[in-house]
Image 1: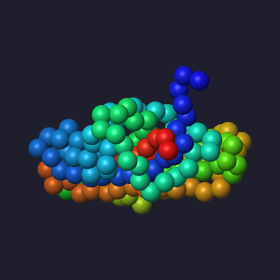
Image 2: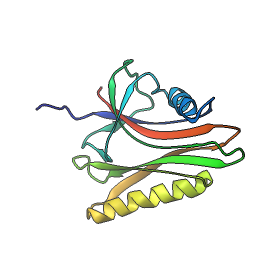
Image 3: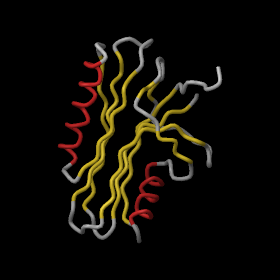
Image 4: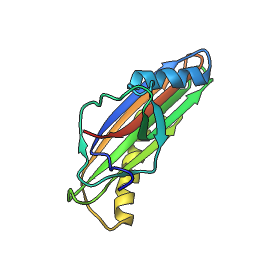
Length: 156
């Protein structure tokens, strides 16, 4: 097999202000614990038998499979939110789903959307989930802000 399936995943989040929106995004990544890695954005499937862990120690500079939602803003006073939703399958030998969403709405609204996206994704596949996990973050922009929420996949 050329590519090994990840065996663990973790949910992370970060928010920040910066001198530019890119600096704010970079600092949000650092706050989430993934800032010194190369993020490889992937579509939204958790491999079968992949287990949730509290945190993952990532090698600096590594190519990291990740699904994420992020948003930046330069509008002082604006609320920005990002959330990740993970649907764990009813049976461990089936894949799980990851959905991400970001918007200029309060976190409760963004988490509700991402949760429904997971429900819909399982329905489209005619499969059942045993649990839906969400993790999100909300930030009120001071000058230039960013939020980031992600599912990081890795190997144990």
